[in-house]
Length: 133
Image (tube, rainbow, N blue to C red; front, side, top):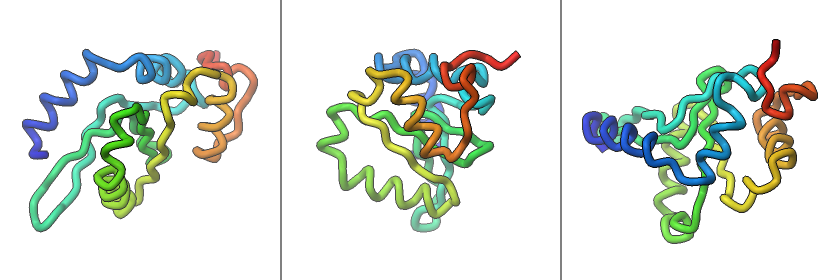
């Protein structure tokens, strides 16, 4: 996608989050998760065949250079595209973590899974999505 198209779509997606995205956002927003700053529907710029293109990441943490993608049923049909997209993003030094919708049902398990994949230790309060004081 080109910049203007991607920017408008990202704005729309922020307003129309899926249920799973809302659950994840509540866990990480406002630095509630390990004091890390996450952005939702964040534009990732790549060079592809000599042109600037943009992907929209469900969630992005600049501090850890991590993209979190929440995969719903549509991703069963887009596996090849997702694979190419993940590869292009990783060439920028950004790690891509995919979480299935079903994994968002057990909050504590999800928090532990994310912290392991991000390689960050959790304090009890941060692990429960509570802002540190």
